[in-house]
Length: 111
Picture 1 (cartoon, one colour):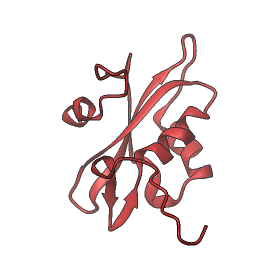
Picture 2 (spheres, helix red, strand yellow):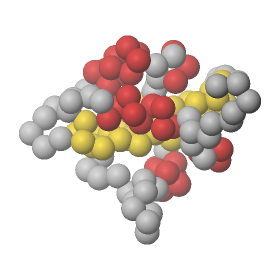
Picture 3 (spheres, one colour):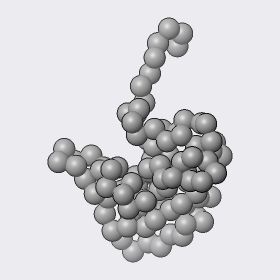
Picture 4 (cartoon, rainbow, N blue to C red):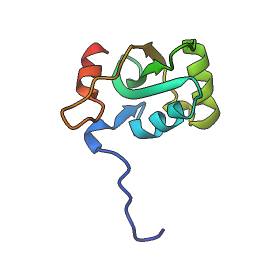
């Protein structure tokens, strides 16, 4: 809509990949749509070529199996190439802040 600004995520959470702005929430929503994903959270990690790259932390639903390649392929179907995670790490639980939101700072230190 002309004349309106929409804020979709926190600016400090934004990932800058090769000059493109990637909002983690955009990638998270695509990951949540995967039927085997229970939780997901994306962060930016340093990359020598791109400045930053997208890394996805994924919690798989109990009893399911999922590979890094399957996660990346799922994202390729719905995201622009620069938004697709280049790294995927499977973890048992997403760390949370006191308010209950995903703690991206903790995940970035895991990098």
